[in-house]
Each structure stands twice: as structure tokens, then as C-alpha cells.
Image 1: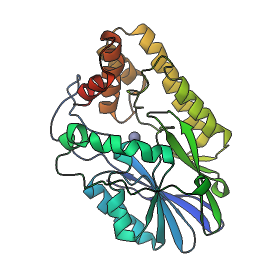
Image 2 (image 1 turned 90 degrees about the vertical axis):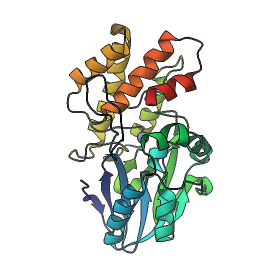
Image 3 (image 1 turned 180 degrees about the vertical axis):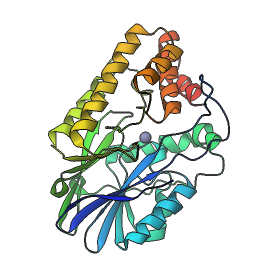
Length: 305
Ligand SMILES: [Zn+2]
């Protein structure tokens, strides 16, 4: 179900990761007959002797409850909740946890700017797939000066990396731990969401974002979507995310249909989680190709439903 684990420690500063399994979905199947699902969402707790900071607290009421109980069990005062990017699965439950712990919600200006769009998509997308499961999600996040805050004197830096699986994404750099909490810039054993990489630049901006993470020279990377049995090795997760994009570029040249892309990716990544996201990605990428000039937002919404 859920597996907290302390993964890194330097002096008084440590971090631990809690992975929320995807909530059950009410209906729908994939082309291979599997029921539709979601992807696991990872939250990181960075903590010192008395205080802690939490990242990306998932999106359903049940996930917030499980995550909150785990955080409470760590026995630290939660000061801040950091959100990496605007996608609702990373922050719709932030309000519940902020209230429970009296914490502040922080993000970059760019991420905060994306949040109203995610709220607007709730009735069309999120609440349809997960009816009654997502709590009220007002935007309460605030910026911090210089995108920098501290935890017991240790630097926490929000690094803006631009477009990755959506616009205006960021990561949290914790230099004293050699840690980057990477949101959706880096994935770990889970299919990448490629449905917002449909401009002429393709995956170029995402590759640039990965380069910005690599330039921080982290030892550990917590991916926002990860197989909880995997470690946080930075070199491996960076290489695998780059490789997945390279593969996608190749398959977009060699496969003529969304179904061909979907099947080829599964053949290459048989153990990756999140096949619903894979099918959505394929549907958007080929939908845009097959219907030039059509509204991309509509194609994306159809692909998610
Ligand atoms: Zn995500």
C-alpha cells in the first residue's frame, strides 16, 4: 500500500519518501483490456531535529489522510509544503495538509500561475475520473523571496526549469543532502506524461529541464512518479528519463498509430507503472498529428477521458 522509508541523511538533516498508490478509478479500460488507473505519487519529507518540509502532497482526501498520518508519525513541526508544478495530482490535497499541520504552501510564481488552469480542469477531467474523492483545492500557495527558504538553517532552493511534462515546472534543491526533489522533470520506473510536448520543439524543452537538474549535480533524485521499490540514484534516473524521451522520438518516427506507440513502449518498458498515462500520451501525440489545426486542449481532454 504505502511505504515510507528514510533514504538519506547528513548530520541533522534527513529526507524520507512516502509513495501514495494511485486511487481506484470508476471506469474505463485500456486498448489491451487492462482497467484504467493512475500513477503513484511521491511526497518527500525533508526534516531536521524539530522542523520539516513536505513536497507534492498528492490529490485525494484519502491520500492526504495517509500521508498526513505518516508525517505526524515523524514527530516534526511541518513548516512548509512545496509544490513542484501545477498538475493537480501533485497539489489538490495541499490545503487539507496545510490546515492539519498549520503549514504554509509555497511554490514559484510560474507554478502558482498554472494552478487556476488545473482547477478549471477539475470538473472536466479530475472529478470525472475520481468523483467525490478530491477535496476543495483553492490556490493558497505563496512565493518566497528569491525562491529560497530554509529548514533549521539549511538552504532549500526552488529552481525553475521551464517546460518538462507541463509548463513552468520547478524542482527543490537541497544542497546539504545532495538532493533534488524533481517533480515531473525526472521519472523513476513510471511512464512519462508526454501529452504536453506537442509543440514544434518536441521534447527539446524537457531535455533542457533535465540538463538543469543534472547541472545541480545531485546524488539523490526523488521523482514525482516512481516505483517505490526503486532507489533515488540521480545518475540512473536522469539517464533513464533521457532514454525514455529518445525512445519516444524514435517510436514517433517508426509507429504510425497511437496503438502502435502504446504497444511498442510496453514492449520496451514491460515493468513500468502508469500505463494509463502512456495511453493518454500516445492518444494526444497521434491525435495532434492526425488532426492538424484542431484545438489541442480538446484533443488532450478527449485523451484523458
Ligand atoms: Zn505528475
